[in-house]
Image (cartoon, rainbow, N blue to C red; front, side, top):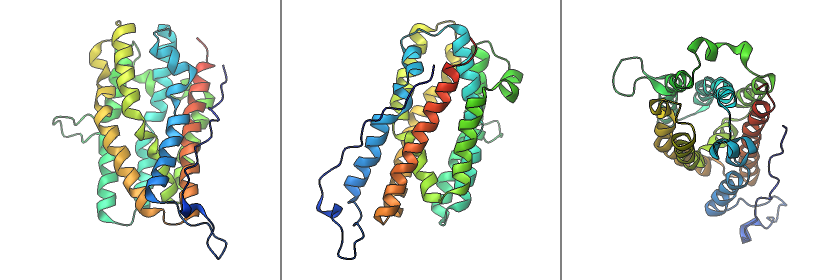
Length: 257
């Protein structure tokens, strides 16, 4: 079933800085207004409001539907380090690259066998196994719905071709991710007891990682977007990312049971 991303307008905050300058170029928003506009995008358009997610959290998905979502979402998860590597390559400062390198390690793991070394991709594979999917099934891209592939490839291409600031801004969906993870954990524990609770480790880990990542990326965007044009591009990039996540769920929701 195809759905439409909510079209709720991002509220405009009255601010004298919005008035055009004498040269005809709009002045930048204040940091507070800019941050409010970014947060308003995720508040209005994040995929926690998608009908498929709402059904998931109400416990209405069949095992087949839940497995289909886990498999399709894995195609997105496996490409997160790819888009982060593209962003990493465009960052100028060592301290910025260290932050983004940590994101890649968070998903790919360290491979050293130490605590937390498995990474988010490994945790998602374990979620799939807990739901009855093999690792081979999850890695098999031929099983991924075309709409999911299109959405993921579009996002990766965006991060490859657009300015680094835009790609960082697109990652700000992380601002809403911790609350979604908490909701999802509660829903799985209550409605899907046939899934081993150990398989929920990905969601538990992303509560803290997502909060940290979102605030760090927000600080970077606020400091780097110094013109109104850059700020507006950042808002548009975040809107695009929300649309990617909705398109992915549209493709899952319309898949074969």
